[in-house]
Length: 148
Image (tube, rainbow, N blue to C red; front, side):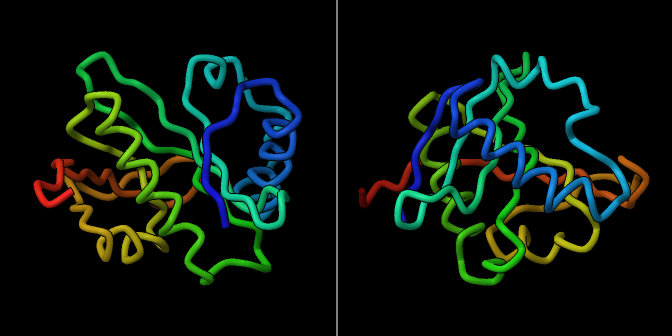
């Protein structure tokens, strides 16, 4: 598996939209193609590839305070639990450090809070509703590994 960035409005971006729709919107009876995606233009896009096929994606959105917000993390349904999400998050953290960001934040669906906790993320505040389902704000302070 290879993980790398890709550009907004590229062919890979269009594939990522299909994955995001399949995993994050259709189960809620929604369509990503009805969302305003203009904000994606200035975000960082990361994809996981197996045999040159996109199998997962996530977005990093720079915030004014220097944090990066991880959002729209999605892995093809048939490949979930194969470690792809974990690998993408770890890549995203390294990418964030390279871009001089020291904190990652995200809004995690309640059902995946445990996944992020295993990766060192902490919940902050109370449960809230986003896209009609329960979420928690989570964060992780990113540190440079001195042994690297």
